[in-house]
Structures are given as structure tokens and as C-alpha cells.
Length: 284
Image 1 (tube, rainbow, N blue to C red):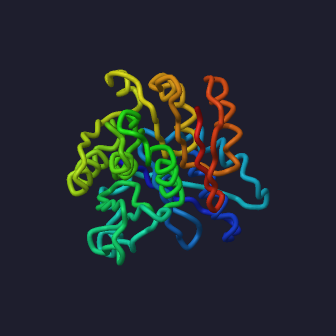
Image 2: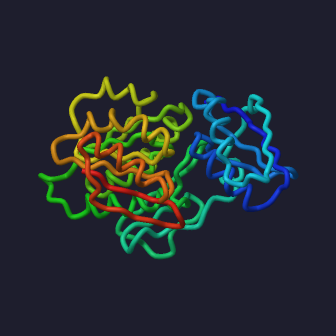
């Protein structure tokens, strides 16, 4: 996947201004940021970049005394997780039963359910609050289901495949996953193999769902707010009667926007988790 590199210059430069800019740009589709001497450099997938949306976002910047300018260039092809691949991450416990780890750092105590993740240019290692909250939610919704009641799961924007793998290890009878990023699809396939689960992720955006047969008992999406709002009607169309939609990747302040769109589609809020201003909601 090709990325744009957007260099933001802030004057005056403050930590609060950088934090606000990262939050707002994240809602406009930016995935990651690096601090610079005069601001931030943000990275966004080229198909998701909309200059008008970014300009409108910056026009509403809440600190009126801060001036923001930016320049856009095509980012060089490089391994976005190079440092992660060199250092890895320490095991992460989700509740008492689930642990997420990489191949370099095994959990000191065996867990009921262990997920090994090798992130190669893809999002989703369990280190982010949203990933952990979705995994915890999947444990609530799947674990303990009788064999006849095991859900069919759809993972939208699968990244490393961690949520699909989690669902399968918890007892889902099947999981269909897709991602717009070819690197993510390859990485999810790789992680499925090392975790011993059956998963063949699809390459494409939400229109790929038109080629997927049947409906799902659980639909999961950990993506940014704007994409969730745009794609929610397609998610809804793939939900079986009584199905649940698990959404994360947004801030607690965004919950009213998402629940309003959900209500328009006939979905109601049944559960909510929050962690450091990040949110995860369940709709039915």
C-alpha cells in the first residue's frame, strides 16, 4: 500500500497542540505520526487522503493562536514496523484467560488462550487500547458458547488478523476477514498459520462484501471513525437477525456520532468499554 507523508508545521509548537493535531488528523484517516523539530509528520494511505477533508479539519482546530501549515509528498516504501520487528513487545494479558505475545517474548505463565502475532507492515499487536478492548469484548460474546451456538464472524480491516484469530481461538465456527492493504492480507495469512487457525483473508475494501455469501452473527471493525461511519450500512447488511456489531478505533467523544448512525440503521447500543479516551461499543 502506498502512503503520503504529510509534514505539519505548528507555530507556536506545544505538546497540547501536537496531541490535538494527531487526534484530529487521525479522524481524517492518518495512521501514525512522528515528532519533528517544528511539528509532526503524519502518514496516510494514498486512497484515503482527501485534501479538502484535511483543510476542513484544520480550519476547526480549537487552539486559535496556533498556526498550522503542511506539505504533502509520496512516502518512500519502507517497513513501517522495522523497529517493532527488531524489538518485539512484551506479552499482553487480556483478562485472566487470554495472552497476546510475539515470537521473541513468550508468556511466563501458560494461558488458556495464547495468540502469537508477527506484525509485518500491519496494524494490530494488542499493544493498543482498542485492540485489547475488542479482544475482551469477543471473550464476552464468544467464550462459553455451546457448539451449536458458535458464531460466524466477519472481521473488517483485519490488519495483522489478530481479531479474527482471537475469534477463532475463542470458538467461532468460521471467520471471514478482509483488508484494503495487501501487506495486511499477507500478514494476516501468515499469523493464521503460526496460530494454527483456518483463515483466508480477502484483499479489498468494503465492496468485497458483495462477493461474500451469507450473513454473520458477529461483525467486528477496529478502524477510524470516518471509515466506520461510511461503511456501517454495508456492515449492517451482512448482519444476521440478532447479530452484534463490535466497533472500535475511535474516541469516547465520537460515541454519539456512531450510535446515531447505528440507530438510523436499526441498531441499538448494548455495551461500551472505555480505555484512555478510546472506546469500544457493541450494537445489536
